[in-house]
Length: 436
Ligand code: ADP
Ligand code: MG
Figure 1: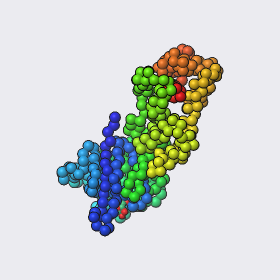
Figure 2: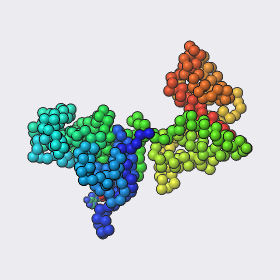
Figure 3: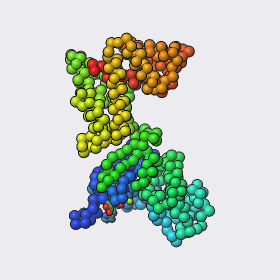
Figure 4: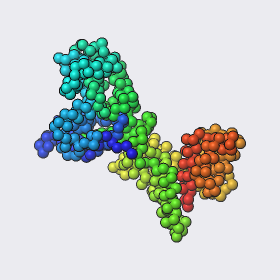
């Protein structure tokens, strides 16, 4: 289990507190950020993005709440620790660059090292290395006024990196740049995150930047309104924390339930299993929403499995905002989720009917779902394996083994990953069909 490197807990920042011009810049924001994540704080002007970023950097003290970075509560640090923190733990990049006009480019980059009392030669070497990396070594002896905006920002990124901090914070870093320079800076940030493995937090109000983030914190009026995982980027381990139960847990938990319920009628068991079914169904299909969105969806799934709402109701409520009793998803996700749920449940129903053809239909469904290319002979084998499992004559491991054994040796010859997916789908549908 990876620990967050930054925990913001109920952070409030109130300016002019108690006066007529009181501003609640941040109104109870909680965020957890994990090592190596690329986070974007996104929202309209004045919503509190910069305040949140400065809160994380320790430049803005909380009115209430806590900010914990690398296990240390910023408010409880001594002066000395705070200085050390700014010099070595976080690097900052601003929209307005904040370069010192009277120092050369090289000296600007070296500055954080000067404060650390490092020798001249060593400082300059590290700084030059960064200038070369960002293609501005030729500007080393120039003054900031002689540089373009894009070059200035690259200098300030070099300055942020010179003490090799784990965390880089950037406040609208491309807000003042032309599109080509902006792209160049965004590429550098991507590299810093992916190659240098820095945790990166960038503030922006430009929706075109969102593709770069692993996770987006949406803000409005001093509050976090939602968190969104960027599905187009590969989710990191940390992002799928504790959502998906492992297959082993599913079956052992189910066994426990069966034992507990052995004196109840089948119908009673079915009712008792519904919350469990809802959870399994949900974790099976999605693993990338925030806790609130997942919790709300789970409740809706229960309603759906209890048949208190139909699939149209499920889809609508998933899409609806929290404050209106929904799960705060979006329409496309709500629709595709509902569609997938319906398909899974219809397979469970098919398996429950005693028709001869149900194994054929189910096998075709699985092959189609995972785009398995099975010739006629292998399809027959595949069906026979599925049948063995559905009739409980082999367990999940038996099925897994038969699916990923090579064709020559009598298996279905699936890739390991495909075999695992098929097994998971089969196990889920077997659970769902249980006294459905
Ligand atoms: P963003 O970065 O999203 O544009 P900010 O975090 O800069 O928003 O500001 C959030 C709110 O706090 C705004 O209403 C802003 O006017 C107010 N604010 C920021 N700094 C101060 C300050 N020093 N004094 C009073 N109000 C401030
Ligand atoms: Mg701002």
